[in-house]
Structure formats: structure tokens, C-alpha cells
Length: 344
Image (tube, rainbow, N blue to C red; front, side, top):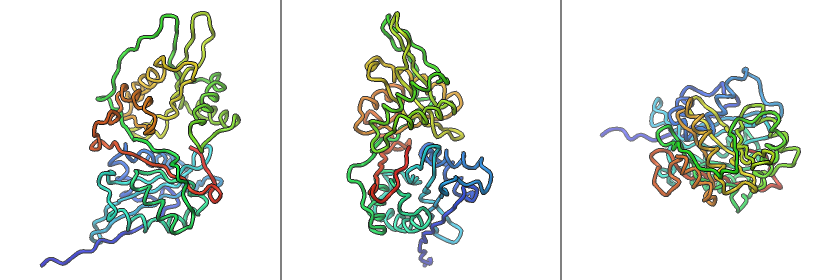
């Protein structure tokens, strides 16, 4: 009889992206759309000199691997604990298995093994929320609470569908507009910053608990415009000054994938197709150089999901697109009396 083999779970913590092993990079690149939330920042961090740490906090990457033999390694999870230009990101967890393939027998021993290394590296106050595929987040929050004693916030911060648009699925079509209206779609410029800030502020009002002050919105708008991450839909009625009706921001670019976020329309200009027109144009532009554009859309935001579906994002009409990577992600926060809230 062949010898019975026992799988071994191994957790590795890295305080620099430069230390990530080739196996981890290969794992991220094997599914660059689903891993985008971690891969994009890892690629960006790789351009920084070795030893160049963020001024306030050290960033960490943690891998969870299964060894079926001393040389047969499979990476199951990659965790990132990183920062952005404004504050700290949530803890992101990428699973190499799709949600549909995650059960308690697989999840429990691996997430249980991850909890203590994350606490040791990042500290309890740094873990203000976790964002991952639904079953990962649900089990992680229970295990984290058991270890640290920190309770989780009962109302999820964000519950969204991860969706994808490619050159093959993108729907390029013209939309009619009232003859008295004029519009222009373009990258934002410096003179747009005050108006972009107003729209960022409006977007944040619906993004609890990650609210912005007016000063914070201005800071965010400046960074987004300076980094060429914002596109605007400018609109005007005959005889009136032009206004910014909608914005969309590009984010998390990697070699083959870019995400879009902060799609927001001024209430004064809603129901005129501005967001759809803008997202369609931006996706068309991005797909000239990227293979995919990805986004998250809240389960309870049916209007936005319909817009993205009409642009060509898949799995938003009830169609099962799990084989293409579409799945539900969940962000749950922890007791804000204990943690330091970040922003994203």
C-alpha cells in the first residue's frame, strides 16, 4: 500500500514585498483579476527601494500554504496589511479558491493558523476591518474575535459583487441626450479639483464609516487629479455654465488589470445616463492597454449594477459567472472603540 500522506499548513509573514517568494508572485499572476486587490499594491510597492518603509506603519504580506509533501506547495491564501496615500487599507484576503469551493473543513484550519501571525505582525488596533470573499470574512471575524476578544460590527461595512469587463464583453454604443444639453467626457484637470472634491464628499456620505471632512475630500481630490486617476462627465444646459455631473476613478492598476471605483453622480444630474456614458467611455479607454477592468458593486445598489451590466460587466443580471471569477465579497469591521479606523 502507498504511504499515507498528511498535509501540512505553513504560514509565512513578510515585512517587505521584496521578500515575497516567486511562488507568491506566480500565484497572484495566475489570477490577476481576482487577486487585483492585493497584486496591484504589491506591484507598486515593488518599485520602492528595499528598506523604504511607510513613515507610520510597516506593511505586511502573509501567505498560507498547504504542503502535501516537502516540495509540493499550494498557496491557499495571501493576506495584505497595507496603506494608501491617505490612511490604512482594510486587511485584504485573497483566496486562490473561488468562494464556491470553500467549505468549513478547508477554511477553518487555515484561517485559524493565520490569526495569530496577523495579530503578532499588525497588532489588534490595526485590524479595523477585513475584506474578502464572503465565507472567508465570515469565518475570519469569528476566529479573530475568539483570539483577540474584539467584537465585530454587526452591520457589514460593504457587501458587494466582484465583476469583470473585458474587450469581449464591453458594450460600446451611443446614448441619446436631450438636445438642450451639452456634455464632455475627459480626464480631470487641476481646475476641476474643487468640484471633484464635492463629488468625493457626496460619494463618502454613502460609504459609512469611511466618511470625509471637506478638508479630507479636498486632499483626496488633489491626489486623485494629480495622479491622473479621475475622469469627469461635464454637462451644461443651453445658456448655463458647465458643471461636473459625474466622476469615476481608476485604481489598483496592475500589468493587465485596472479597477474603477467612486462612480458618483451629482443628484442634480441623475437619470440622464451620465454615469453609464462615463463608465462606458472610461472602460473603452482602459481596455486599450488592459485585458480587464474590475469593480465591486454593492448588492443593495441595483441601479448601479444595472448601469455596469449595460456597459458589459458580467454576472450582474443573475447569470452564473463564477467560472470567470465573479463572486460576492464582504467587509466586516471591528469595534471602533478598540481599533484605529483607516480609509479606502
